[in-house]
Every structure is written in C-alpha cells, then in structure tokens.
Image 1 (spheres, rainbow, N blue to C red):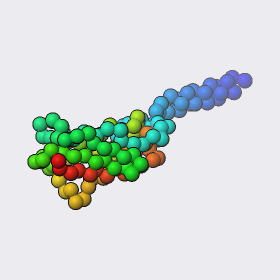
Image 2: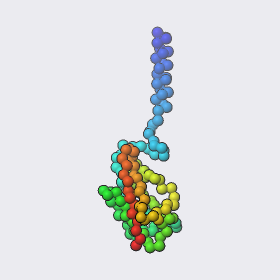
Image 3: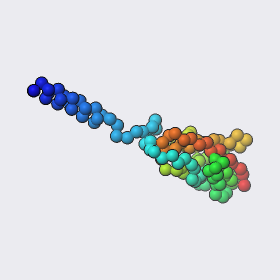
Image 4: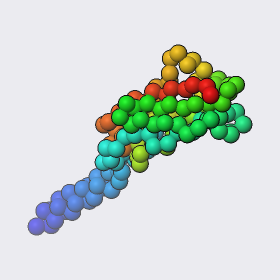
Amino acid sequence: MAKYFKITLSILMISAIIISCKKDSVVDEDGLLITFRQECFVSNFELLGADFVSVRSKTAVIDTVAQTIDVEVLFGTDLKNVYPQFTLATDCKLDPKVTGRTDLSNLASPKVYTVVSGNRKIRKDYKLNIKFQ
C-alpha cells in the first residue's frame, strides 16, 4: 500500500511541476501577446519631420477597404528623414516595424506596411501614398 502511495505522490508532484512550468500566455517573436482578436486595420496616421512636428498639410485619408493611406505633405518636406506613426486596431502590430527615421522619398514606389491581427493569422498590406501640397 505504501508503494502505491509513493508512486501516486510522485506522479502528482511531476504533474504539478510540468503544469507550473507551462507558459501563462502565448507571445510572439517580439514579446507581444497573441490574442484572439481578428481585427486588422489602420485607424490613424501621422507623419512627423526631423523636428518631430507634423509635415501633413491635412488629415491623412485611410481607406480600410482599398487598404491605402493617402497623405499630403507640405511642399519642401524632406521625405528622407520622416517619422511615420500608425494607430492600429487593438492587439495588432506593424511589419516592418517603425523604429526611427524612415526614407519615404521614392514617390514612384509607395512604401507598403503590413498590419498583422492580434491572433497573427490575418495580414493586410497598406500602401502609403504621399503627395506634396
């Protein structure tokens, strides 16, 4: 009887160790929480110059169906040295990440940013179209 008690106790202890080592949450390669959210869109866009002041001449137009962002900037803006800022749906992330200054000067080939949903299963490419005032 004592032998079965020890075996049962050992199994319970091993099970407790395995369960306690299990991750409480699932995170992606960036350390961000992966959720069940499927929403995937850009809700706001800002473009800052080297002095961190907006270079937009008017509000950006975001078309979530066509997946485009149309922004008009002030004449003379140095597009080789700008900071794009995106507001995304909850739990989404942007690819490529914006980590600092960005060169958006090639207007003939608009930059494409991918918005990835919270569950990391839906990806939508947004084309950033820039024109001068």
